[in-house]
Length: 275
Image 1 (cartoon, rainbow, N blue to C red):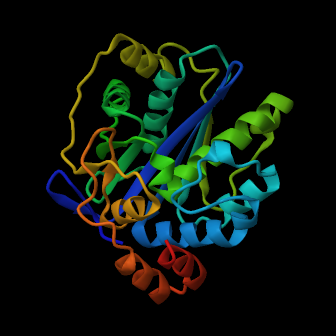
Image 2 (cartoon, helix red, strand yellow):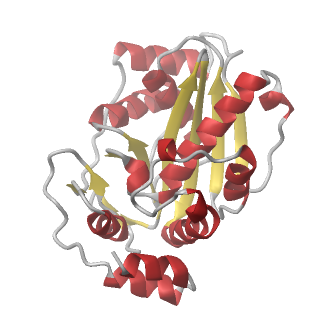
C-alpha cells in the first residue's frame, strides 16, 4: 500500500476516527495504524468475520450483527494504537466527535509530520476537528475527510464497530466504562462527561458549536468509487472518497493482490483477485 500524499508530503500512517450515539451517549474511537497494519487488519477481518457477512470494501458496520466478544477480539488483534472517548449527556454527535477526536490526538501524542487524520464525512467534519484542536492548543496532523470511509479503510470500520459496541455496553451498564482498563492497543480511555466548561471538553465544544477557530484545509486527492474494485484502488493509492468526484484512474486490483500475497494474506488476496 502506498503512503498517503497529503499537503505535498508522504505520510506512512493515519489515525481514523468514527463515532456513534445512543440516547445521551456519544462514543468516539480513533485507530492509529500504518499502511502495513491496515493490510493486516483487512486480512484479520476477512479471516474472522467473513462467515458473519463481512465482505472487504463492501460491508458497513450497520450490515453486521457481531457479538461484543468478536469485536473485542478484532480490537485486541489490531497492531496499532487506539483511543476511546465517551460523553454521557445530550450533545450534538458531530460536535462531540470533533472534540473527542482532538482529545484523542492529544492523548496519543500523534505526531504531525508522519501521520494524517481521516474523518468520516464531508469537509465540514474536517473543519470541525481543526476548530476543536485549535481551542485546546493541539497541533493536529493534516486532516482529510472521506465519505463512507469504512468502505475505503479497514481501520475506519474497526473504529465504527468498536464505538457501537462500547455505546451498547454503556447503555446496558452505565458503570462499565469506568471499570474498564487499558488493554492491548487501547492506549487512552477518557470520559469527558465530568469536565467543566473551562477544561478541554467545554472549550472545544463551544468553539465547534460557534464555528470558531483556525481552519487549515489540507490538499489531497479525492475520488468517488462505485465498486469494490474502485474502492480497492483508492485504498491502495491512499485516496479519499467524495460524492460526485471522478472515479479513480484505474480499478486494477493486481498490485493489491500481489502486495497482500507477499505479506502472507493469501485468502483475502484470492477473494479480491476474483472481483
